[in-house]
Amino acid sequence: MIGDAGAVAWPSENCGDRRGGQTPSLVVLHYTAMKSAEAARDWLCNPEAQVSAHYVVAEDGRLWQLVCEGRRAWHAGAGSWQGRADVNSRSIGIEIANTGFHPFPEPQMARVETLLRGIFTRWNLTPEAVLGHSDMAIGRKIDPGPRFDWNRLARQELSIWPGRSAPGDFEADARRFGYGWKPGQEDALLSAFRMRFCPGASGPLNEADRAVMADLARRWPAPA
Ligand SMILES: [Zn+2]
Image (cartoon, rainbow, N blue to C red; front, top):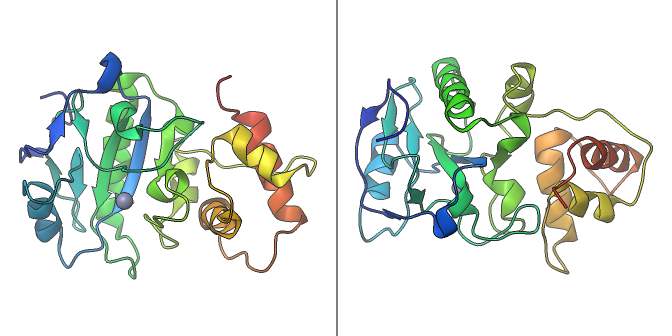
């Protein structure tokens, strides 16, 4: 099994081949929204669930690997990134045990970080590869949620952190960066974007939002 040498192997049958021979170019972070890490792990191994992830990270830093990184796990579902659907075929999914209402404890964050460093090395990835489920499933998913510390990952070059560029057209820049959404989901787009890049922001779309989105589009544009 290609993966983290320190993980406990806990195989799930809920997986398949990556379509078109793709290899991982993205990492999608999730929270489990379940009572315990073990309950989430077991659900992701249950054939009835029809869902899985490559990894589950417990609050105390224990790590289980359910699916080989070379295989397609079923974590991302409907949605898109950089104009392409079937995110599962080109991503690695990490489920971080959290109810959605609690901070992510230090040992868990540290384990996520070492896991990401290994994934970057194995698949030659760079910080813009890391997404939240909320980024690629606008209007449908909000995990890993407002409690997740993206800035902490960015300080270790495990995610990106934008500055501000000259404000432009918010939606055009959002598409250029990679967001996909349907008509009527503009509010969901704004809240997903703020949850990740402008923590604590509220109210209608403003100049700061436009400046940050412009910077994302300028520095990390989707491949043409
Ligand atoms: Zn998720």
